[in-house]
Length: 166
Image 1 (cartoon, helix red, strand yellow):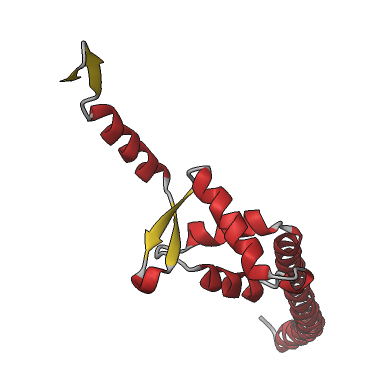
Image 2 (cartoon, one colour):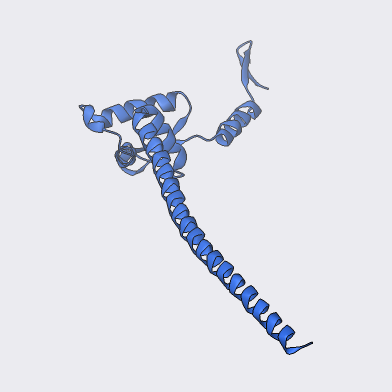
């Protein structure tokens, strides 16, 4: 190769390098812009997700607020594993933002609700010290066990004035 050929090859290589560097600079700018756009879109999506989450929480809270006192009593008693007094239940209802001020005597209303739940077999009375009553949700398992116990106990029948066990 002659010197002229080397110089021409060097010139072409310099030209090619310059074009590549310009392309690289353009690509670097494009990458930087895309990174900024992606960061902004991620922030926007996170904000939207947070707003959606807040809306879902508000819907649940509003549903709780619209829930009647009987249904709220059921929910709270189901959630609690230990027996609760009517006062305990009232406190839990107030914590869930149930407006008990609309009742002249909220505890009387709660006692009535509990009495109905006991009569329907959904709740059982658990005696406490000093004659106080506590109330506990009756689970499906408890109901089934109770029915099994009742069906397995011998029944008494009267025949000719005598008691017979079956």
